[in-house]
Amino acid sequence: MSEEQVNNLRTELRKQETNQYNLLSERLVALGQTTLESNLLTTKQPQNSQASSYAEIRHRLHKSLIEMLNPQAVSVATLEQIEVAVKEYVNNALAQEAMPLTRIERSRLVEDLIYEVMGLGPLSPLMTDRTISDILVNGAHQIYVEKHGLLELTDIHFHDDDHLMLTIERILSRVGRRVDESSPMADARLADGSRVNVIIPPLALRGPTMSIRRFMRNILDVNELVAGGALTFEAAEFLKFAVQAQLNIVVSGGTGSGKTTMLNCLSQHIGEGERIVSIEDTAELQLNQKHVVQLEARPANTEGMGSVTIRDLVKNSLRMRPDRIIVGEVRGAEALDMLQAMNTGHDGSLATLHSNSPRDTLARLETMMLMAELDLPQRVLREQIASAVHLIVHVNRYSDGTRRVSNITEITGMEEGTVLMQDIFVTKREGDEMVMRSSGIIPNLLKLMHERGIDVSHDLF
Image 1 (cartoon, rainbow, N blue to C red):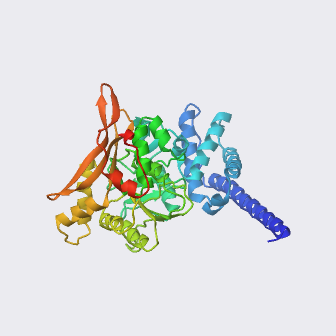
Image 2: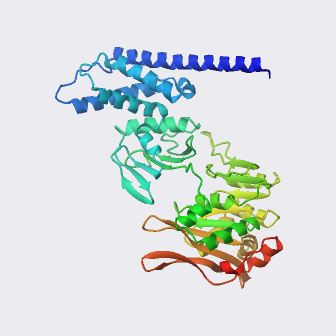
Image 3: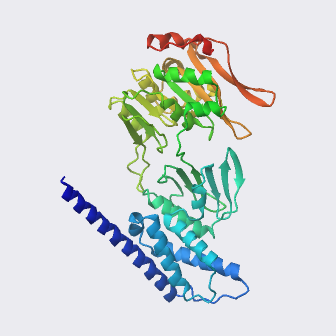
């Protein structure tokens, strides 16, 4: 493409941007006039109830703006353009208001409306706080957040359940999902990758309920986990060598214990020359390597058709010539396909699952393999686990909100129908502190790691 063609293209893009901005601005101004004409702001308010008047004005403008705004214009406009257009809308709308708002109230109203236009309403300020890892909306008037592993109640709330539902519908509509009485549950993903779960009445008895699991923008590395006390330097070094030696590793733990964070850290040790296929229900992993194929499951549509499960993706990934398969979370029958992949030349695979301990991890794997309904004997299932999984990294969230690696456990084989395991590193309470120490056992895996070109010093143990 010549330089003249490039300049012409840039000029055309500027024209399109200007046209879209003008469309948005005209739409908002027209919206303000329509709002006035339809008596949304013509109700006179008593002068002695300015706080309630402001709340009523804000609510009516919120509702009117969401219902009438052209979403296509918003999708191509910048935040600055939206802010200018909303200010014009507010000025036109309030010109007819009997009770004029102060400059601070006008500024606050503009900010509230911008939050509404961007889709998250009162939750928008929470989404900009990087210390918040979870946002839990229990109806319109109760919103909790998790900071540093501890829950706290906020003073933020929606005007009513209808206001909350408008926000939920805007979030879901952007990813082609919906909720109603016939389908009262939904999962979605925000633009920044945060996971959203919604459940509404009649299943949620106290009003619409929404949970947002925040997406971490900054990728932690193992050194930061060591500095934060999540594990020791020796344990981190051993895990680095284990990934480089292409051992199959399962990261287990409870909800919110840091499994995905640990999986991200482990994946950083995968070589640049390897082809990685990641499979997730909702994309969360942040893989820095160049050769990465990310797959995401798809739920059924409104007719109950078109579902693509994690198991479908695991099966398909085997035809994609992967060097590493990473399963974001194993929940069901895909456990059998994943273990078979580990046993058929796809070494170095990584996965996470929910469990309470390393031993429970094996029990959950066995249970999920039974979901495949192949009627396999228990001994066969356990042999699959014993031969496929090399290491279990179990993470815990403790009562003080800290997240730590509690066990790094080696699978050593099978004896008399029982999968054998031994802890290499264990975290225990010593006084008032949780401390990770080596168990003093030299892992059997060192021989396999040596055969794969990775020599590990016994000094780590």
